[in-house]
Image (cartoon, rainbow, N blue to C red; front, side, top):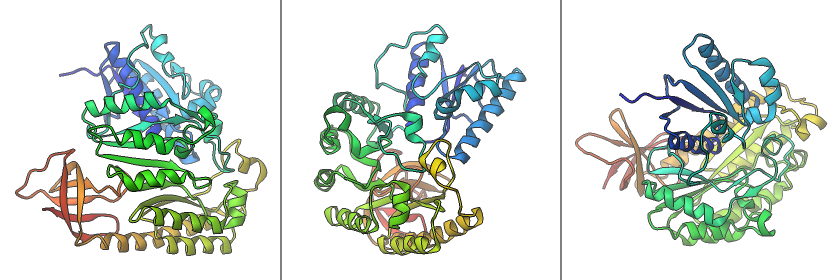
Length: 431
């Protein structure tokens, strides 16, 4: 049986996952065997890639570090390393508090880990290990963010926006296709800002158009856009290209103009309504995923009611929400008092998600009787589990297909008649 020498554990978002996959490439190029997110890590070396976005995520990362610090004290692992967003921001504090960690690295210097082990870090950039199911992968096109939203610590952690070169991205996409990837999840802290730091112009539409020309890519999905100054030519590409999913992940956060102003979002209530209308007009049938925040400092019941009215009007296909938490060093933490009681935040969060649950149920029910192109992700119990172009892996509704008397292949596409629905999932039969 293969002996795993290195366990990589990834906390947080898909952007962190890409960094972990790149680190696994470096380890394997130097003769190590790697396991990612094992339920029972048993490697001589454990590397924890941390998240530092919000308080809950930070605490989860700290708990994971402490868990393996204890494993090291008990002799169950030999070496423990920590990297990622949490240690990028709080390295000195972590070093002082958790001495069992052999060394802390940040978000951008993790390759030094191999150097410190006396290994080589050269190799084919982009040829990373794919830890997702082999038919889809995440492709990061930039790092950092030039936006300065009042609640967000990401610019503090990642620094200014820095785009990768177009050719490097295309080369990596081709490598992924050679590995069997059919679906590309395009990711960045701020997707639509791509290219601004290169020549002052947005080149996201041009990039997506070029990626869609690559033979073998059947779906391209766009994550983490920003509504202000949205590049409309991207919508033209989405509309004309069959392999660009009619799906857009764009965080709106709120709709009340006073709240948006305090959040430093550079958009108004009226402009937000117009933005959503423009998206739906430009790409008929588009599925919109967004994120909303409740309980931002100063949010009144009137502000929250405006948010509920907007969500009821917009009928987002996918919506996530969270309660505001004060983050060290952000504009909000420095300039506003966190004056919405926690119980009010949670009550508003429940009301908002209850509304979205009903909207989602109605939208999913509307798909019954249609035939959809579905990719199969896995088999689970008595069902094959897949997705339409309107769903991203792990976070969005899925399509359940009975496994009785049929054999479907993971990573293959099928035409599926939707026969039933629940609040967040669909049922179907292959036609």
